[in-house]
Length: 452
Image 1 (cartoon, helix red, strand yellow):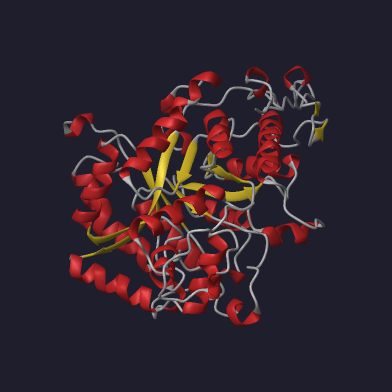
Image 2 (cartoon, rainbow, N blue to C red; image 1 turned 135 degrees about the vertical axis):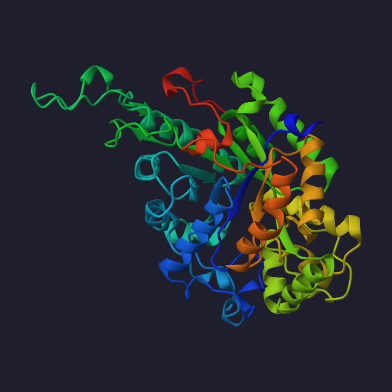
């Protein structure tokens, strides 16, 4: 494949409270969420924009981790800003960078989500993205008047209908519905108003959205589910899929499977971008990068390592087993994120990890691949996956802030640009344009909601 024939990689970066690595907040150079001022968040976003990244991606949850105080006191995830509030402020200080926030379909209502993301899309002039999740922390349910979480299949059934309603709400108004004719006293054209009048199994929404049609038509929709239900929902609705893949073979199966499901929904495979997550640790040399990673790994306290591993593995109690003994073979899948549970357990069994090795392998990157090396070495790996046809780009998971974004911009991005694999400037002004995504049709023209 010649340099001119190469498709440009799409690159987003997760912006977590201090970074993604569970020990990152302890690094001497880290700025944690509770320490960060808005000026810090502004600088990080502007650094991502100078590097021409597609978007910053704010993950979110709606509860504290479900851990006893002795473990909870070591957990960085106890404090984080509400992402839409923060992104609205960042929108004023950036021009081309996409602004993506997580919002759950389990503990929100469609009207709220449609209105908030439409507003962010307007304020940012077309740069908003919604990461649709169904939640998998059981304790979130107790913050919203429930005794337990929705079942796995029920969550996805609800998510499909939730999305359908949000799409209809974004299509409440045609693009030219507001003439604002002062001479005639005509503010909007009633013929171009389309109330959803939705009555379904989970939601009833009668009236139109009280925000005009977003600049992108529909803000970009991201999803991260990799279970059977998650793949089907992504093939039907998503613009971008954020996925954890450990091997080239697994990534190839996922890529082909999800894109292969799209035809039955009248969608072309190129209208969905699949972006595996990678935790990058770049340095001027391999040795420098490895030393950075070794320091971070040494900062993972065993108590928080085991706690996070238990959470990712669906609540399985690893403390009952010897820390340097093998990972048990009888760990059941639960009502949490089943695809991630399966992925990490396969990794442990394939590599013959002890429990200590398992948490060191998994919790630093939350199950994503870790790339350690020079900018050239990391670019080699990214290029291999792209040219193998298993990735349209990547979601970069930084170790800690601000160093991780700075290192990415200094070591990796220039190398990808030199190879013709990444842009030197933005292609457009909206997130859809920069991701190479088409406009979304009106919901009334899309398939009707169904499941199964």
